[in-house]
Image (spheres, one colour):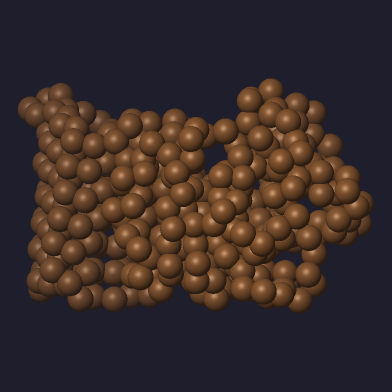
Length: 357
């Protein structure tokens, strides 16, 4: 099989992550201090793919600034503007010139796969189907694109069925030959006025082409909602290795799989892993609990934080209750006023300031 290309979808408004995504692309929300999008780009690189097109929408400038020409990932990146978010099959058609006659991996930029895609790409190369779809058993299939199988044969695909007859959801990674282009040109918009990739794959099936299913055994996360983002953060931190490159004073306790980047300082504090502390961040007279990702240039003082994501440049200080299960944007300042609150839970957009009473 010829050289595969990569197609990463990074359009979409990210409405389920607002207010964070009023000012940031959802694909750039950090998980374990790395933008979600970067995990996908690294997975493509590790699978031997070099040429990657990124479909972009209104957040084009931010995506372009983050990824550059792709050289930092070992990739050659082409930015492909999409006129409007009109569906995944529309994105494929938008990329037709970039794709040419090549087979390709389509990767949704806000998805995470624990085991990457290297084995899947090898399987695709060896078996040479017309398409390969990744599937996983889910609890609420009505929220996903669903595949119905007859043994190892894909029979039918339905987008967000009201009465699902299968619990096998399509994971946000697909492998296609050029045949999908013709199918995408054949289908009509759905009730959502989108060209659905499920309809395009169904067209492949109806044409008698071979669509191969692959059931994913490791975890997969669509990080489109706050709970999913925090869960993805937990899953990635769970497999990191301890690394202390920053400064830790003698009065501090670092327990477990903790990463402290160079330039960070931990003073009279306890950091219990798995957790990551970004460069330039100061943790002072504080407690950072498991599954916390504190980005670069943050300040946490006289406060406790656990199972949360804190974006760069933000500060939490002088709180007498623990911050937990929270996703806090850039340049956010949270501090305590005189009255005593009992608990805190935050989902905050960029450049916010909150005084608690």
